[in-house]
Length: 123
Image (cartoon, rainbow, N blue to C red):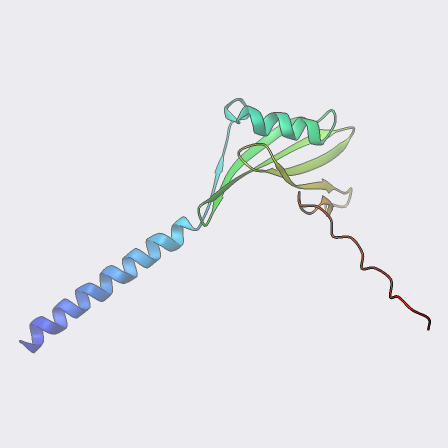
């Protein structure tokens, strides 16, 4: 009886580990997307975000069930990377500098936080 209980316990634990490792594999997934297969909303938003951009590469990224697109391209001799939602909302724009470093042009599409009001009263 103890042997059957031990075997059942081992089977349940093994199934839990397999399930956990499968779920962990699904948390982050990157897959290349052909430019002609890129959703129109994503393509149009990227082209509107960086004037004269010629797209060269696109990826569909899935992280914890959230899908985003990352596109790369050149405009006016500069290389750009743009992160977008499937609906075409620009989430982040990076301009690649000459030395290979990237410069964040827009960290987020959310509204900027205004600076705090100056204190009232005499000092």
